[in-house]
Length: 503
Image (tube, rainbow, N blue to C red; front, side, top):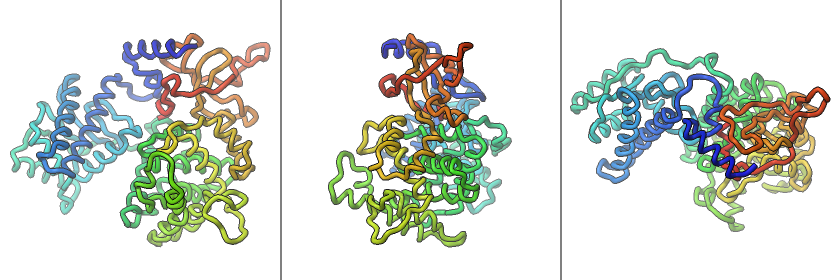
């Protein structure tokens, strides 16, 4: 199998209207063309960018003008596909005309912000039939960010329309919210997992930002987000674990915290913790790095190696996390277990690591679990000082075989049993010379080396438009396995973005 063959197959698929095998394997639900999805996403991202620009800069600033131009161009592309351009909210989703904007790491902030503004303004949808002038966009963007909150929600849309009319802006057509889609029963497993993940990511971002600004974040919101994670793990763990393949660089701190929460809760379930214990574990895992909100951003985001002094500053995030958690409102009680985990998650089982301890002690079970999840996700992610992450299978092997890393061997063994020898998101080459992606660990705990694999390309390197899931435990009539993993491979080598197959 050659990279040229894989690239040519990818190009052929794009020419046929499928940008990649990932786009062809997104799952069930409403199907839109790749062009419609890209155009819809571009409108929401451009709208969010224009909102931010108008809020931060004067109208004549070049950033505002560029943002308005990009918004106009994005709307123009949508209007070329049909009649007008409409942005509509329905529950936790945003639609552009009839195309739902799929949540992803590179647009979740835009979707969340647009949803919030439309809710606060009482707007269900707004539509343009002709392209507005830049001045009209500025007026709308400014009014949306200053909604008349003194009025009941159902009366705010009328107030907004009245203010726009007074400013001689009548090009926008508004409708109140109707028929909201907010029933998780209508979503498939992947959509429910995506929704749970993005809500957790939004809460983590809010908590970390509030802590950095010296405000008191809401512990109730954290508990609600973690409760959704626990429920998802108890009912359909594979879909949510697949979301942890989202390890993007720009939002690393927030994404890492959510991934550690999911992995920790999944591992806790494997260890037999009760639902109440899983909730405590999930809260502690989601907040384990909250102390980084007190670390100067220039140190936290520094590229390249850290000096000894800078490393010492980074290492303060453990006890700084304890202080951050201690400052939370005590209405629902102190998160004591989260404080312990924040302090201990970088300690090794022999009490080396950091912070240094002055007395003999035993690490808490929650800290040991979070340490394993934290170490695995960190090593498999791209970070400011780690341009090339390790493959999941190699990281798991190191955690299992290298006792100097200081992880509890029993917890690591349970983690291997959870993920299998080839964790979710590992790119593998099969003895059939097909290229595969590990989709889930096998339900049979004895099949650690035979996971469920999504076959991405055939033996000739041709990308499959509808990548099938195959069970590596499947055998022929003679009892021989139909497929076996012969080695792992680097997804970048083949131009594969692993998260596309899970998000």
